[in-house]
Length: 198
Ligand SMILES: [Zn+2]
Image 1 (tube, protein in one colour):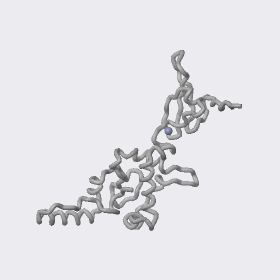
Image 2: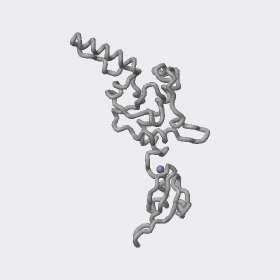
Image 3: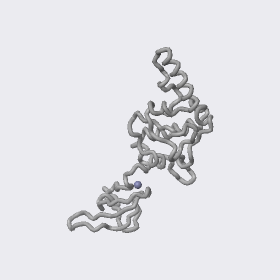
C-alpha cells in the first residue's frame, strides 16, 4: 500500500526548514496563495503555498548562505578547506608561509561544532562566489589573518602584485637588473607555495 507523504501545513509562525512563515500575502483571486517568509539567513521572500506544501518543500531562500551550498559551491568549499589546512597543519607544504608565520583563520570563518556555527556559510556570505575559475583567495594585507574584510578574490596576476613586501622589493631589484641586461623577467610567474591557490 502506497502511503501519501504528509503534507506540510502552512500557517503564520510555522517553521519549514530554514524558513519561518510570517503571514499570508494578498493574492488576486484564482492565484495560488502566497506566504511571506523569513529565512534563517535574514532574507525575506514571498513563496507560493504549493512550494511549501509539496513533498520536498522549499526549505531556504536559495541564497548563498546555506549549507547545501557545499555541493553547489564546491570550488569555494575546497578553497575554504585549504585555507584552514595551510594555517593549521604543519605537514602542509606551504604551512611555513601561513601557520608557521602566525597566520590564522578568524573565528567567524571557522566551524564551531559546539554551537553548530557554520563557518563556510559565513565565508560565502562575506566573499560571495569566486568571480571566475581563475580567481583564488587572496589576503589584502599579506601579513593578516584570513577573515571578514581581510580577503578578496584575485587572479594569479593580481596576487603577484600583492606578495610580501620583502618579496616585492627583491623583485623590483631583480627586474631592474634584468632590464639593465635587456632580459625578460620571469619573476612575475608565481612559483609553488607562494599563492593562495588550492
Ligand atoms: Zn536564506
